[in-house]
Image 1 (cartoon, rainbow, N blue to C red):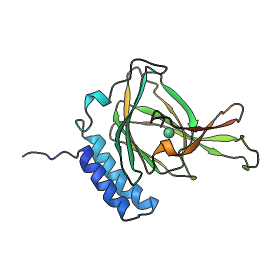
Image 2 (image 1 turned 120 degrees about the vertical axis):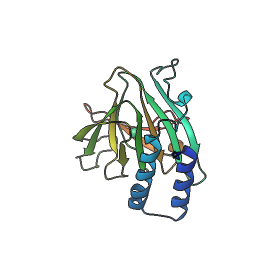
Image 3 (image 1 turned 120 degrees about the horizontal axis):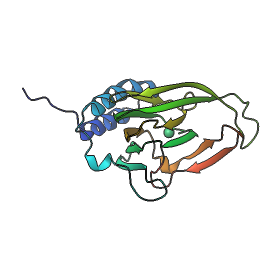
Image 4 (image 1 turned 45 degrees about the horizontal axis):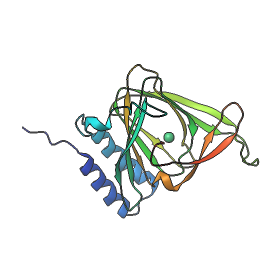
Length: 194
Ligand SMILES: [Fe+2]
């Protein structure tokens, strides 16, 4: 018997169809995370050329490559975290789902505990940290639970599929300095952020 594998094309078709029905975030997470789990559970779903670190430039250990950008805003990227790769706490300001394809990634979640009264300042408190393995999904819930730090604490590349409700290149987001409390506004250039 031939097993039909769930492809990137299947995933984006299902997601676009869901988004067209104007669902709430909970519906997106319920259905979308099950579809993303199917996608990243298929080891052949993403070609090898999207699963390698760049090897050159300021972050040779890293890579972020566009897989799909829809008119609806739906954005799908393949992100590679090389051995020891690290990205400090940041937000997303849109819903997101991350599925692990290869190796493991340590994600640390934070929440704001200040009163939002001082421009350019935020006090973050660590909420939890977890190691995600192939086939597992982590969700980004706008304003509620979406500030995270990413670390590859292993000695080989980790590959993830990132799915967002909006093109990150169109959103002014925030990076947080845990020590000083400084908030830096940034906008993703190309798609080399996550
Ligand atoms: Fe992120």
